Amino acid sequence: MKNIIVCTKIVPKSENIIFDPTTKRLDRSKAENQINETDKNAIETALRLREENGGKVILLSMGPPFFESYLKLGMAMGADDAILLSDRNFGGADTFPTALVLSTAIRKIGDYDLILAGEESSDAGLGQLPGQIAELLDLPQILFASSVNVEEDKVRAKRTIKGGHETVEARMPAVISVEMHANQPRFPDFKRKKTVDTEHHLTVWGSNDLELAEATTGLKGSFTFVRGLVDINPPQRKRIYIRGDSKEVSSKLVELMREK
Ligand SMILES: Cc1cc2nc3c(=O)[nH]c(=O)nc-3n(C[C@H](O)[C@H](O)[C@H](O)COP(=O)(O)OP(=O)(O)OC[C@H]3O[C@@H](n4cnc5c(N)ncnc54)[C@H](O)[C@@H]3O)c2cc1C
Image (cartoon, rainbow, N blue to C red; front, side, top):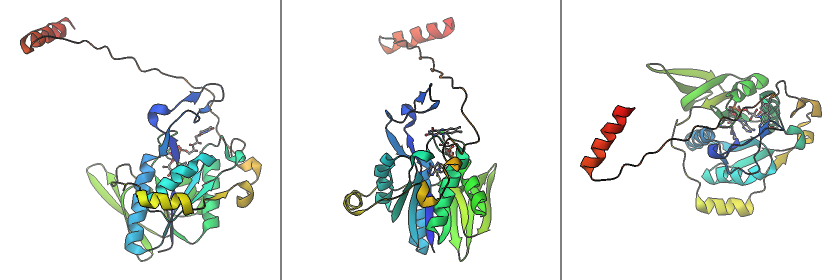
């Protein structure tokens, strides 16, 4: 098996997501971040496929420099290498320039059999990236896979459908998006984390390395623009405490329920 490339997005924890109403962008500066949950499922799938078939697992991410520490966590899970695509020109991208940057980098890495991704990100959550990458690289795609297996030059994936599942086969190389909860991602290995922290030198590619013109990436290369944002504060739950022994509490509870 050749390279297995896993598209790995670093996202703010859902309780930390803040939209800047002026720029209409995600404000990541105050957020605690993590590897996107379904991308961990994709990494786990890649590691298992490597254990069964050999090859190399490479994490690929587009984002700002601070993503490095999270990619190192992914490497501590067992990935062999990580590449960060980072450039000021890449900022403010909608899905198309994101897919363009990722697919150009995938071409540059080369020698791949599988490109894995999560089914969707937990911040923007469009679920379009894997399909767009497949289109840009002219590769077959299987989306929302619950399990993935490889046999010679073919990949077989199960997809959950209403009332059961279907098995879909494609020739490799192929793009597969992995369903949320498809597996139990392993924890980063603490010893490996130490080695990665001290010995791994992250490869960072910008627009020059990928030979991408400024007009095709980031905000300039985007076809869609966020024009409005509405912040909805969820209503606070009303809490009523009932005190007393169990008889008093239950009769008070019944009384309150009758009132409502
Ligand atoms: C008009 C517009 C403007 C935007 N501006 C900003 C902005 O300024 N700042 C900002 O943070 N976001 C911005 N976004 C969101 C950003 O475009 C998306 O995060 C990005 O396009 C990926 O889409 P998604 O997160 O919905 O990916 P999905 O399609 O839901 O992701 C599916 C999978 O693709 C892979 N993937 C997705 N993104 C990446 C990545 N960057 N690197 C590696 N793998 C990845 C992961 O495996 C992920 O699980 C903007 C979106 C739009 C539409």
